[in-house]
Image 1 (cartoon, rainbow, N blue to C red):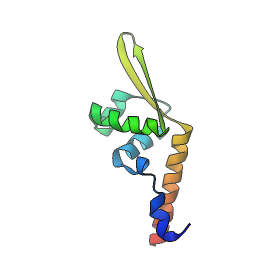
Image 2 (image 1 turned 45 degrees about the horizontal axis):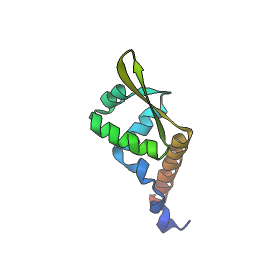
Image 3 (image 1 turned 60 degrees about the vertical axis):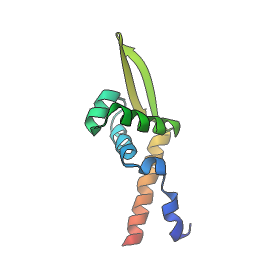
Amino acid sequence: MAEKNIYNLIDETIHQRTRLAILTTLMGVDLMEFNNLKRELNLTDGNLSTHALALERAGHIRIVKSFRGKKPLTELSMTDKGRKAVENYVSLLQKILNKAR
């Protein structure tokens, strides 16, 4: 890998601020309800939905919709692919920081 190309390896799906916040929050739990994640990250329904769908399309998270009684329930969780992607992202950032020193 040529050093000048290391920045091209950054996963843009993860690198986006809100998506990174979603992923790192989900890494610490098995499952999180949509509304709890929305509150924790101070996001709107639309903002969280849009970014969560992008992460789901990339295979990084799983979105499960069900009902609790008669109320809709949306829960999110990390996939193994998502965990590995975050680990690779952090490793790449460390290499970039080491290069800057």
